[in-house]
Length: 303
Image (cartoon, rainbow, N blue to C red; front, side, top):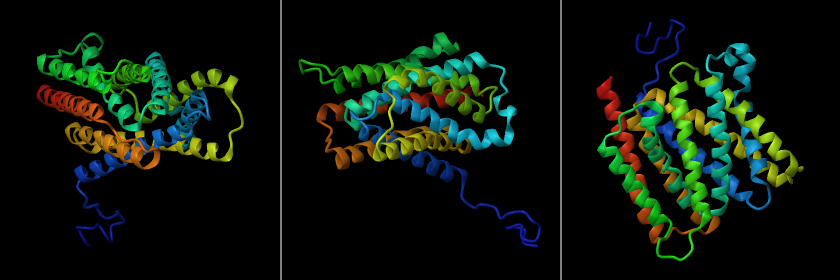
């Protein structure tokens, strides 16, 4: 018997890849999928209503979890916190609608940078919602991040794009997603959380999507299907990355979305970020990174 591979025992050979490398690979793949999702949304701009896009995304969420539901049945639906699942799904529904709308009207890099402000909203809400003590370092980083938002808004110009406000509102609801997920993850299975997200968002998006619903053109259906697949797949990879490695390893890799979205914007939509966006991105990403790493350090010290 080969003890290093397990041959002759019926057990599969051990994977020599360190968990941290696997986690990094999953996190980067998730960032690519999340970028692809918004690229497909942008390709549908002005041809498919955002409500239809939300319906397709929620249907994709249910389809992604359906095989598990078929195998485990009612066990996957079992929960002791139905109202918190409802809140989590509602936050997702509103966040997705605002998020997709902002990506259709802003360039990819700007919309991606503004989505990172959800980390700052989490800091602002962690005290009253989770009862956490937020000290001066994280508050300072939060203020710096919002100064970055001011730069992205191009303060010397006479007109501020309302899409920036919509993107920030999306990030605010995104912070609600983070906070409710933190509470749910203490007692609920990941698959149960994902399933209820799909059920709540589908039930919420169907009534608002029906008035504008129409049979899509083949190319529109193609982008809708890809968007409905890449979103849940990216979420699944992202969650699995956190299972394999510490948040200090995984979270910073999420900010590679800015690189991927910038490249996609230049190549597909001829979008070149200006100096204001670049300066704001440095402050927003830098502060979000600091908050993430600081939070992880405090959590380890507490543990």
